[in-house]
Length: 191
Image (cartoon, rainbow, N blue to C red; front, side, top):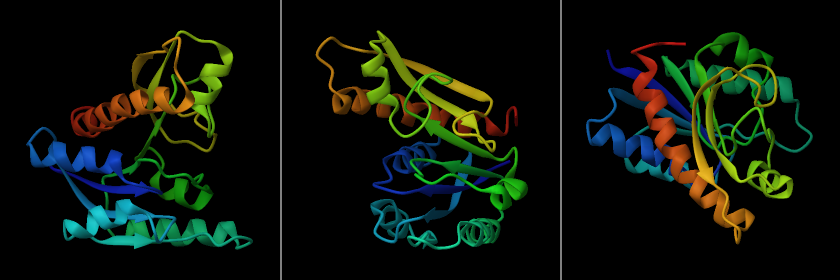
């Protein structure tokens, strides 16, 4: 069975592109059925449009009702009938309405080895802590901040001269591989 995937993203869409590439190469039995962003100017939406896919922005305006936004996001994703929602660089927390509908069906990537360094600044926090190994995690989204059940992890050595940017770039390579693997594994052993 081909897994129907909706990808959530906020930026350039390189994680989504890795998934597109793996599907095109026949490495993953999946179909991205839509890409949804919280930012209308996200480059990842253009990547989706170039493939002829629905590419929709559901922005959260400053000061707007977050619960109402969460419901709009839920409804937009539900309209595409996904088997799996892949949060791939989506920089907003998913709220109760979304999670009630897609509980157990939403995965996320994180640029650290959870449970260490949750939140927005995994690579920075890893460097500040002086760890020798960091990495990437794919996990099942729950109502906490990066607290869901860990599905996959990959280690990245922290080099003595690493900056936040250089470490993050090496972690992104592992994140892409893990996201592709998580989608490939979805039908084999749905969490």
